[in-house]
Image (cartoon, rainbow, N blue to C red):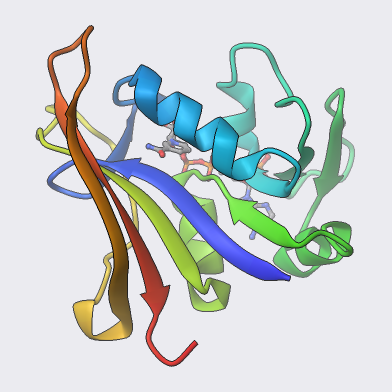
Length: 165
Ligand SMILES: NC(=O)c1ccc[n+]([C@@H]2O[C@H](COP(=O)([O-])OP(=O)(O)OC[C@H]3O[C@@H](n4cnc5c(N)ncnc54)[C@H](OP(=O)(O)O)[C@@H]3O)[C@@H](O)[C@H]2O)c1
């Protein structure tokens, strides 16, 4: 099973603000769905809580929490990284979809990063993607730039593979 991360990051590596995304880019949301559909996704309890409609359809939703008593409709709840990987057994791909704490925890196990780089620095951001060390990753694909109609923000996609994987 391949472990991959998918994240939208700003110029400072920020990913969140007040428990929510920095911005919703419709093109990026479509790409997220297209890439993750049919696969397993892992998210932290806080990221799950911020999903407007709960579990995401057509994907195995795995939620990480330290509280074993929690349950969420349509989700497999796990209390460790190992249990998250076990829960995804049989899937071709496991996507780590955030947030900051969960990205950090899975970084050493991840082979691929699907990043959306937003050409902006968001004031007040309070959650960040882990530092990406260029010597550890090689860019295998770049797409864009695009401009979001609603916000006017420019963004591009970048896929990175861990060196040696
Ligand atoms: N830009 C993006 O692509 C993107 C993607 C996703 C999220 N985000 C943003 O990121 C922010 C949320 O990130 P966050 O770091 O605050 O929270 P988070 O990673 O979503 O969730 C943290 C929670 O997950 C559980 N958890 C994390 N690691 C665990 C482990 N190893 N074992 C057991 N439980 C674990 C804990 O839940 P309990 O407290 O219940 O124990 C922890 O409090 C939001 O602003 C969200 O919008 C951005």
